[in-house]
View 1: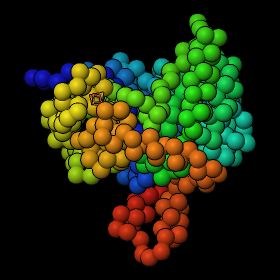
View 2 (view 1 turned 45 degrees about the vertical axis):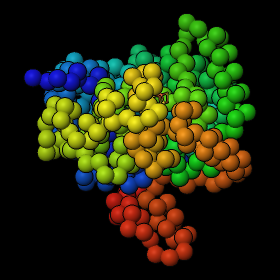
View 3 (view 1 turned 30 degrees about the vertical axis):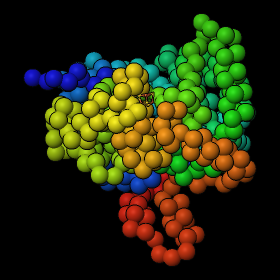
View 4 (view 1 turned 180 degrees about the horizontal axis):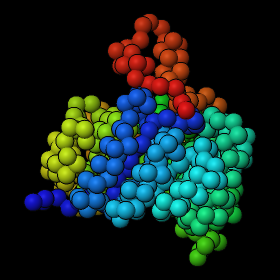
Length: 389
Ligand code: SF4
Ligand code: SF4
């Protein structure tokens, strides 16, 4: 009998293929090739195991999940199993017929990301010409198909001054939920931190923009907004606590407590190709490592917020403190907090820093720019990373 409550939701990364090249992409730098992806049958089996475990929602994500030709089949199975389906998409590969087909097989919800309020700026950030206008068209088809729409706005120094216009754009598309999400600085985001980090003044102005938009749109749209980690006083309860509510399945079937957990060295993640989902959820070493509060050191161990924010983000603790078991340096009680405040200050003044776009070619170019031969890690990443699309 299971002792753990079941996960509420699964983030199913159906593929890492994506025509966009966002410099803050949450995918790992070492992307997974299409030949390694789970088959339709393996995803269907995973959904059956998830339903038996008690999972209520599946977020169909990527990469770009609509790059999978079997998406309709996967949605139909989830519907048959009573699992709520949310499609997280860049939208650029969709046409009207496919939106209608997905609605017909029972898709429950669509979330579309926008990079800016204007086409030229948005296409530059996403690294994909024509993307913005296509997204606008797809958003209209989604609403015409009576599917509820969330617009996701990832914000950073290069678009934060347009936040008011971006929110207005989303509201005009009849989005019922608008997510204003600051870039998370690990993986590609960490590599681009100097190009993306907002200034303190921008963050303060954005707080006002959001407050005013919330008042103006009350009853029409809900705005989700979280203060960016580097300017926070306390960390977010990342994933509702490690291994407590969510799990991520990578395109190749690895099961992670969060989508960035692979960035922490030394953790071994199980695959649904080798171990049943329920067994992984309950017993996997990687899930147990930071579950609950026993792993915590001070100041978290004796803190009265330890079961509220669960010590913050483990991936960020590793990225910034070099120790995944440390207090998230976003917390003002962390001994490293002053360092990340200084990093934010420094990066936010970096001016016109160029993007390192997400792609196989980027990994190669970064290696070529450096003096000397590639590191072992770069060799592995270059070998494992396909181009976009
Ligand atoms: S490149 Fe952009 S659109 Fe594609 S998966 Fe990454 S963040 Fe999403
Ligand atoms: S010390 Fe730990 S538990 Fe307390 S607020 Fe900071 S991160 Fe959260």
